[in-house]
Image (cartoon, rainbow, N blue to C red; front, side, top):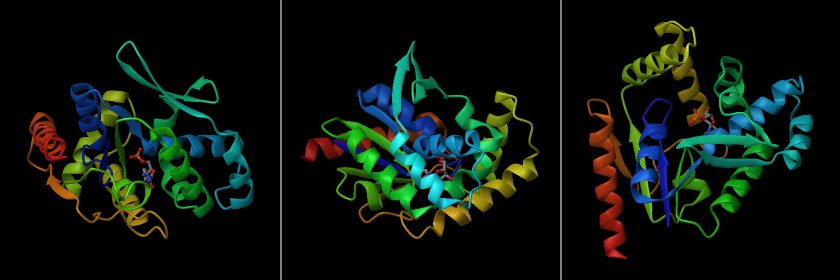
Length: 222
Ligand code: DC
């Protein structure tokens, strides 16, 4: 079974997906993390973001694994734990542009399909219900007001010790929305058959309960 959770930055996808994976025993595939790994490789190799040819050559050498250790989700890139590094300011800055490079998108979508093969997964991203798994059994589009999403990210950053003003975060999110919605392949949009869940004034638990009910009603129907 594939549950696709799409939506913009700060809509609550990451948090809710983790909760639902735990509750329902599904494998959690964070597709944004796969693009973040490519962005980290670009930085580590000192490549320019416009050097598509070099970035393309990196792709076959990227091995990504999602692991669960002591109840924590870890992202392993070529054998190295990069869980924290892929959330850094530097990666945040270029990841949207990296994820818009067409060969990167094609390669990563295929990798994500391979990672999900034969498993019951909940996948969060931007284009899961539209492009990676258009036949997913359950499709959810999470959304929230841009100011609310910026407030959430600002709070999250503060907790992680990332120094950024609220205005900076808001600007960053607006830019990412713009980039994410205007990609040639895999743009962020509401998939056909997706159920829209607006999280603006809801608690995480309320959102998780709502989606859990949607998933359960789909499973019962099949
Ligand atoms: O969800 P996130 O913030 O970790 O995603 C990082 C970037 O990757 C974000 O700018 C959008 C992009 N992305 C994408 O284009 N397609 C996906 N399926 C997931 C993420």
